[in-house]
Image (cartoon, rainbow, N blue to C red; front, side, top):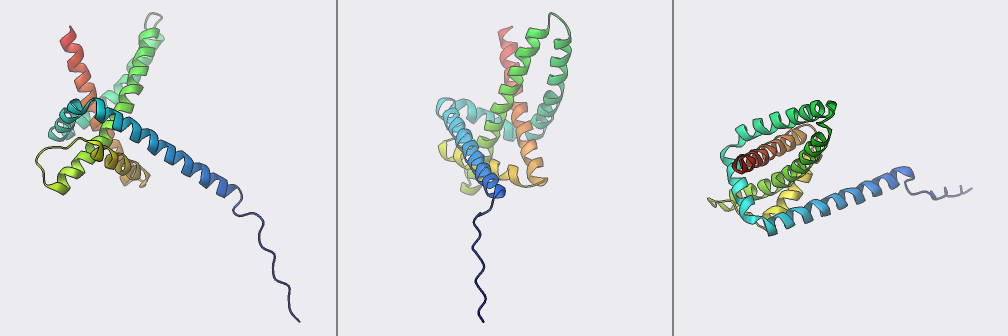
Length: 178
């Protein structure tokens, strides 16, 4: 006597499949946005990025420390300003500047890692900040961010070093204004 075949499942993967699809869409959108922003930065500010990447390589650990201290001190300064009546508006401006510089630091870290990889692979003496290094850097940095613990730490160090270079440059710019 033959047994009937089991029925084929009607649901492919249920909620897990939907979550995986949404996660993939989110990661692809993040890649596209980072890539577009990095390419625009390279197109419009190639010379400045060249200078920043060379400065980042020359002073990597001091810039990392500067970025770390700035990343810690700025929110406390903003909070202290926000507690005063007069300082609320400057605190909001400082917060917006902080977020903007962190976004720029993420993009600079991606461009730096791409230029560094191209420099190491091609045995060139100078960094090549171009669309290829920006594309490779964005992809490498997003992959690095997905590696647990070691990748997160490397990503954090790269972003803090980039944040240090950017805040140091911003400080020098403000100093020249006065």
